[in-house]
Image (tube, rainbow, N blue to C red; front, side, top):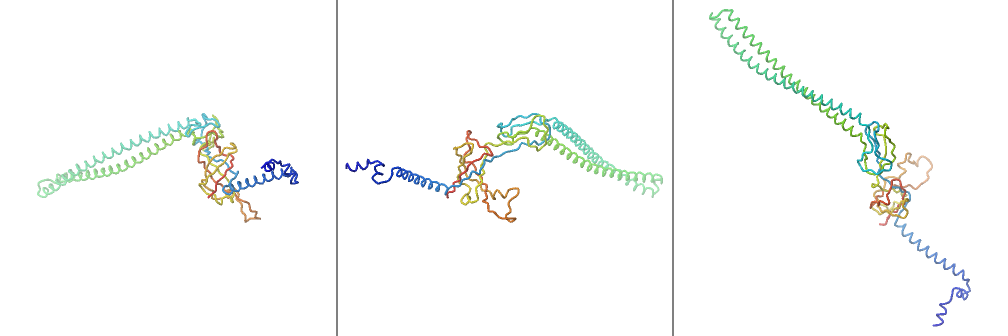
Length: 362
């Protein structure tokens, strides 16, 4: 028992002395053994991690950046926001001088009133033509009665003249009355036809006046719409960026005056090597860190993988058939969306660099 305790209490120096090995060599060997064990454990851990994960530092935050464009040209009356100001969707950002649009609205309104008056005149003319047609029809009935009576008198007087009951002069008067009645009947029938044609003409004028009034009403609506475009509003909620407009400046329709950068609708585009996509697919979990916030981990998932490598979308895509071929590993954009919105203390801005790690374990 005492011998065992004595042996356990031997120092490395005594052990080295007994074994004939220098003490510092034993210490170095122990340290080397510990380093080897630690390296092996670390290597196994790294092997396990990289066998189930793919990572890249070629990744950036992307987001919606909406340009602010005026729809009408004119002089800027006032600018209501400043750079990097947070705005809500629909907020008025600037006002274009409304004097000219107001004049166009007044002009269109006057043209509409004139068209409405013309329509009323055409409708009155149509009503008059219809009344004339009714009168002509009544005159036809009266003339027809007169013509029939005159024809009957002519037939009677012709028979009386044959018997000598009336003179030749009386018969001629009856014939003249009958001819006059027939002529009057033809005249009123012609008037009735003219009245019917006038109705058709007046009806066409009413239709044209209605069309003109509708056109002028549309012009007025358009002028009012153009007037509303003088107030330029934010297309989305976000931060005002790259503002390059000041009061008094003349702006053209479609000119970019500033941009609105979304703070909430952001995602990550990571450019993985093509050799890293073997097991990658949509829905896999992603952890990434932004260079702005070291140590803070964001969580997301793979939403989609691009249909082509980034080089295919370049201005001058490579054509390997035109010269000597050098194989270069291509990168494919992968879209990553956040599974939880970033908190207010760690906002993500489009363009930030990130390191993304995708779990590709089956």
